[in-house]
Image 1 (cartoon, rainbow, N blue to C red):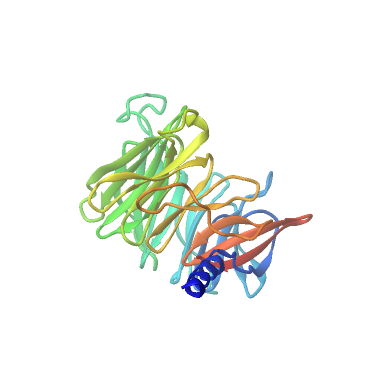
Image 2 (cartoon, one colour):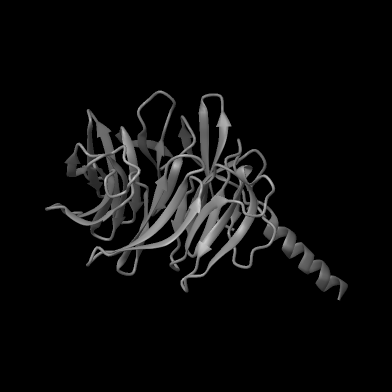
Length: 326
C-alpha cells in the first residue's frame, strides 16, 4: 500500500514538472496574438516606433511575411492579413509559400480578419451621419464583410450599431461570432452572433471593461472581465464563459488585469500581463486559479493547437521556445 501511494505521489510530481522548452528562433520583440498552423507559429511583432510586421518561424528561422500589418489569422489552409499604408487598408490571402493575393482595398478602417475555410471575413468601419453622436444609429457603424479566398466580389453580411470594430472570434455552425469594444472608462465589450445567410444579429453577452475573448472548438465563448468578487475590482480580472445552453459562469478569478485570452481545442486560457506572463486555465467548476507549469525565467506568449509559445528575454530581443500544452 505504501509503495502504491509513493508511486501515485511520484506520478503526480512528474505530471506537474514543467516540460523542457524547445528552441524555435530569435525575435526582436514578444509576439502579439501568436497562432500555430501545421508546425509553424505566426504572429504580429509591434516594435515601438516602427511598423508592425507579420512574422513566422520556419525551420528555426524568422521569416517576414508582410509589414504595416494591423490584423492576421493563420490556419492550415493559409494566412489572411490586413495592412494599412498611405491611408488605405488592404486585405490579403496567402497560401503556403505562394505570393499574397490582394482581395480588397479600401479607405475604410479594417480592424479584424478571419479565415474560415475558403471564405475570408473582416470587420470594416463605416462612417455614420454624425460620428460624434451618442446615438448609435447616427454614429459610425461596423460592417462584417466576406469574400472567397480565391477572389471575386466582396459581400457585406451585416452591420453592427457599434462605432469601433473589434475581433472576429470564429464561426460556430452558420453564425459568425464577433466582439465589439465600447470606448470610455471603464468601457465595455459586447459579443454578437451574426447569421451568415440572413445577416441577423443577436447579442450574446456583454461585460464592463476592455476585454479579449475566444471561441473554443466546442462552441463556448470565453472572455476576460472585471472581477465581481474583488474589493479592488479595477485591478483584478476574471474569466467568464457562455456555455452552449446560454448559461454564463465565472471560470477563474483573482487574475491580474491587461492580459489576453487564448484557446486550444475546447479549452480557454488567460495569459496575464506580467513581465514573464503566466497562463491560467478557465476550467469548468471554478476553483482557485492555478497557472500552467512553466520553467522559471520563461514567459508565455500564447497558446494554440496543443502548444505553448514561450519567450525568454535577451539583450538583443527575445528567444522563442515551444512546449506541449499540459
